[in-house]
Length: 399
View 1 (cartoon, rainbow, N blue to C red):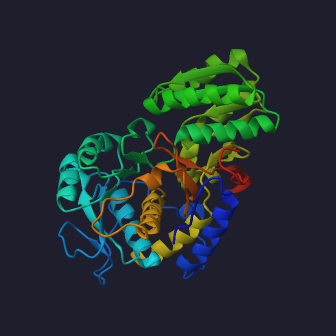
View 2: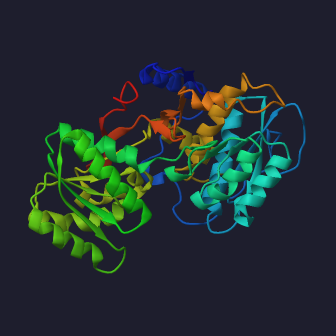
View 3: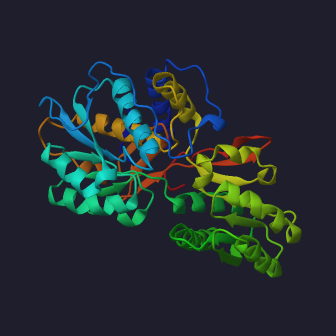
């Protein structure tokens, strides 16, 4: 069951709540899933679960009026069906674990039209929407939900879609970059370089990087962009060489791309510390890339996720996608609030705007005034074929 606290409760208290809740919810798991088994990476669909007794999940037909109706909007067909089905499985697992009798979740396929899915969900009586996954789908769903006064807990990491009743649960890159830069500065990294792709993610990452370094009291001595593909990455690194050496370089891209860039960087800066983003936490292969040994990146903790992944595999016969924990935690939040949510009434959205902290598989989080989930992040180091936590999640938000 999700634990809640009113800020400024210490996040350490929330983590104790997580540990207690995990002992209850995930107690059936004794196997820890290694990072290499964190989930499929391709678009293949996850096999649907076998028919089971009523769990509070249905696929679009109103079956009772005794529970609060929640809609899950995810891709259940098309190229993203695998991650969508994994999110749907995660919400089912969370309902079973919490044993809540006040929430019914109905699944709607956004691959056939996110706006249409939202309209059907609201017509079916949904008072809360979980999802969608993609930012473009959130933009279609948000105005429909807003008109009906139905809050949206989106799984996107695009903070531009947050606000006016839409809340972003995805892992915001700016928070990850700020956390790892602050940690690096505290360990003697002063002169920073940055490599970012020419894409929306790269644009936002570079802005966050510049602000984070300035706030930490460091100095950005070089920032280069590159197009993905071809030899553009090596060209960007070559352009950085004139400003070398660097104490640390942020590579705001996948771990695979970072691993290709590091040998080039170290020709001019052999001792530079490599920094990554939250993207690395979803890549099983990063620990096997020797060039990334010693690199730091900030993300949500994997401790409880590994237990969740073991239980998911036991029930559904496959590994979950890493993002599926967002679906699990969204249900924990809904189940917690449902204690004070009268059946048939509007969802108490004020609870989301209050700054209340929630605990889940991905650790403690709360929604800021902008509607973006603020998360307590840890810093991990890639070391000897695994990751080691070198800076645990902070005991207080904002510190």
